[in-house]
Image 1 (cartoon, rainbow, N blue to C red):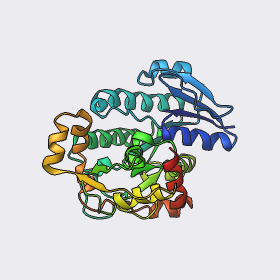
Image 2: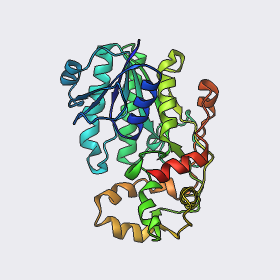
Image 3: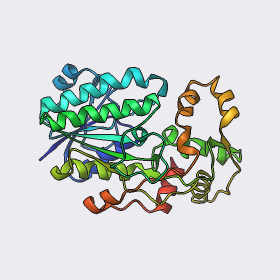
Length: 305
């Protein structure tokens, strides 16, 4: 039986753990606190994953290491991610494990066409450049034969347990009280949303497929919808009427960001919400035979939290 090591217990980490356990695999989940995912039969370990010596000492031998970590404080990414990413890469190499990375679309930077995996990592903001370096380091190790690495990239998260990690789910509490939903950028532009369960399915499939290693894959996702339409669909899934949406951009965003460290960070990503932001997932659909979770089910799960 293969052993799988999952680092991180956020929405993707939990979905990966649930999927692996349901398939009968031996799974260890590592978080700083040792938080229990609630998945039966899974081992939970408390460890500082940014220290490869500590991590290697407390985890059993593993066939696959899944990087599902997601530092939620955007303001500390430049401090938290470099040692964490380096540690996970080192640990995967020491274990002889496949290194499967949960990535995102930040490395591409501003785009003017649907995103395919052959786009260059040309980000101009510091978070995008940081994520691009993480993949570049893993890919270099892969090409040198030190590790087998693969990364899957999805768009903005929707689905179960996303909460504050998603642009749609973040505004649901206010919308349920009938309040205007304040969203990033324009709310009338096509935007791809990715269910976290589809991220997990793609990550596990890519890790298990030796021929898929050494490159990135885009997570199969539903056709793009506008932010306003996406929120209306989620609310309709629980019988709630739509609410007014307002796009936060330009001088208004600058004024609010002056008092919000989080919005100052998000402001660097405003390009994602000023024009169409569309993911092309054809390659992964063909390779892995994965289709996205039906949109109606995605909306129900997002509304349920």
